[in-house]
Length: 240
Image 1 (cartoon, rainbow, N blue to C red):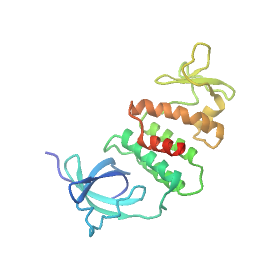
Image 2: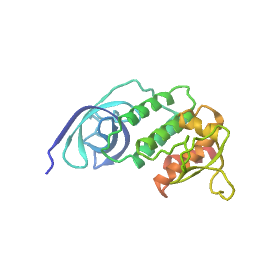
Image 3: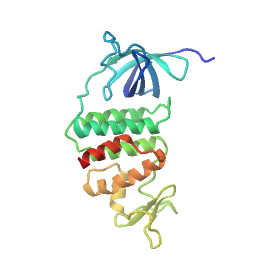
Image 4: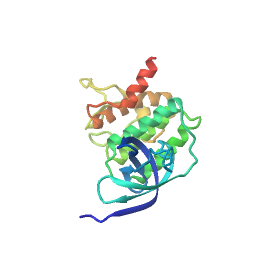
């Protein structure tokens, strides 16, 4: 039998919570040192609970937990402050980030750099920054942390460098190849946009237009057949 684990004062964010029994919650959290894990927040829905109203998504917390099984018990949570409430497109975008983490990040697999990138992306979503570059940058970092990010500055066959004025195709599970006759399965990608993506620079509108469908193809490949609920909601709101 594994030893009972007691962890204290860990930076964390709530990714998702669901009701459990009459007064409690099952909370999926993303922690800096322990990755993603589920916790039982006992009595969190009681009116007098110190956890009531505290376990909100997108707010920085310091938490502690205890237990030996897969689902441990939340023992303490404190708000660390400094994150304004999100609204509108920024709020939908933050839910999208959470859904990506829930679907792609293995449990109890620490990714401190990704945690820091998530916190910084939330901070910038609360400000005047353009949203698409923030999302593309986070998507790329997530894929990189999981070992799935392709090279956007080197070709798959032979390792030649991507050229600014070149034209390329991206083939899933193969990578970048030069755009030649007979390869019609993917959109043609301009070299200068790919090199900007390799630098993590999504500021140019053309780079964003290239990056969005490309990143969507990559993410969908690893997500599988089930689509993202946040993306469906966002598209429905756009139609309205």
